[in-house]
Length: 172
Image (cartoon, rainbow, N blue to C red; front, top):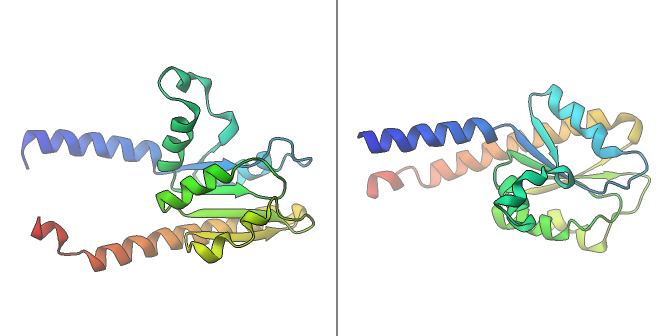
């Protein structure tokens, strides 16, 4: 490896450190239970850095438009959580998740209808999405189960990719 490759590797390692535990949370800030604030502590206890999408720092406006900002955060998340119990306009963000092939957890309050009929079949059309229904009094367990699924899903994707393309670098 030459000095230029070492420099690139060092930069990639540093970037990976900043994003290897990032989790973006999508959802409405108007949900009566302030559910998004109940999701954050469970993620933090497990070593993740949760960030609620609508709270992304305004400091990024100097460099990115809102669309670029959310795309950057979604792209750098280890997985994404979308709370889908009330409409919040995250349809575009869910399409970004699909485009990115991002592992995406859909949380849904058992007592409420889904936010849109457009999300009813989302996990049928993308194996990177999975819906977890929760009871508000036991949401921590549901989040823990969802995180376990996301970790396993990410590991499976890497394993399949590495097995399928193990000789790719040798050929290039």
